[in-house]
Image 1 (spheres, rainbow, N blue to C red):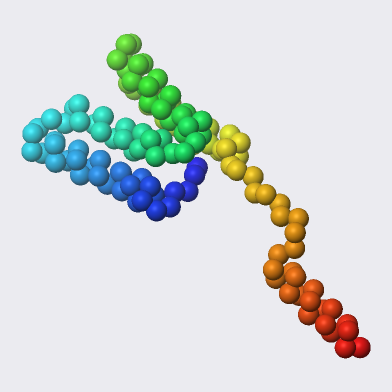
Image 2 (image 1 turned 90 degrees about the vertical axis):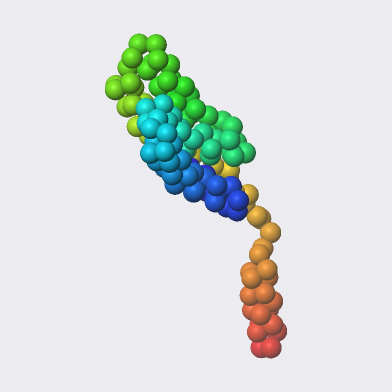
Length: 126
């Protein structure tokens, strides 16, 4: 998966902790445990919302949507959770398709140029 730096990375890294704190606060203070578990979907949704590449991060949204539809329509909450196990498999199999290829710089780097100058200088002394 993509590595986020800066404010995006901080928000994404803090999302599970924020969700847990919110879940526990709402549960203990208001006694609403059952519908509050939905807040944990933010762990999957926040990186998608902060992503630059929609196609790379759309699969978790599809899985969450499918899970909710299966659970609400035919009550398959229990076997439906297995769908979440396909998310890492998807990125293992297809994650390489989303990586940006590095440009091969055909010009010599500064280090190579300096080494060449030094070698030429040594050759000229002979």
